[in-house]
Image (cartoon, rainbow, N blue to C red; front, side):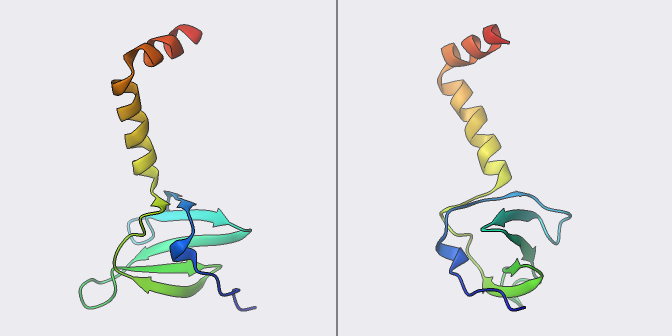
Length: 94
């Protein structure tokens, strides 16, 4: 069954770590399994978006509204450094 055409590149999507270096990101969006594959750049596009095992988009630049797992972790670490009183309060609550 073909995947419904949707412009995933413009959707805000939060990604989790994938299964290996070739497929570094995965998520579920609208009940569809999404994976990002890293290709043989520069001979090919940098990435391919795969939806339910079907290649749907090739692209070179990571969409600004997509959030990678390491981006979330980095923001959490930065947030704790910016507000040490929040970090201390969280530790006291534990």
